Image 1 (cartoon, rainbow, N blue to C red):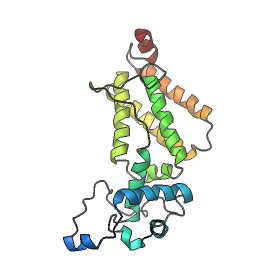
Image 2 (image 1 turned 180 degrees about the vertical axis):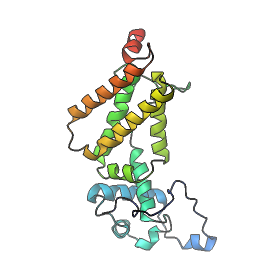
Image 3 (image 1 turned 30 degrees about the vertical axis):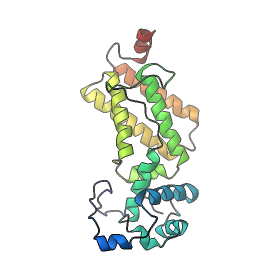
Image 4 (image 1 turned 90 degrees about the vertical axis):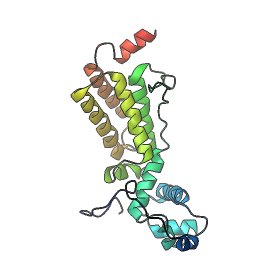
Length: 225
């Protein structure tokens, strides 16, 4: 089963590795009709259909109607391709819109303040994991540093900014939310929605208890009323 690089193997993330430009002659020999985006999209579809255990470059190439070696014009390894698929799937997550001033808009959530927005973000993340069961093991196996993963973390950081927490409390809140979201991924299909939401409510209540006076969801809702 493919879940990550071999134990003990040292590899550089696809997002950090610089690929040297191929000579002009070799570029002209590359298979036509392919690019990284098309290959990544096909990888996501194949993983959705067959799962992580059955994924192979040969099966992917067959689905694209090319040889397996053709894929290596665009990615160096299968692990690189799985990293690309991981971030592509995370791109389906709807993030809270950001205002021009750099704060999150409350229009997208029926609940006022950061607690409601955090709930919406967490539920959205859970839905993406449910739609792509292969995603959870990859988030544990690879660094989440692609553009969509960074956008997700930036949105989470902005929500935590709204809590007013600082220093160790802020760091702890970020760690708690991140661990909760990643930890729930392995059982996202089995855990009832109600259990997930109850655990999320408890987590948010803990953050609210640490938040400065006037920054809780209730206080924000009162002020908006």
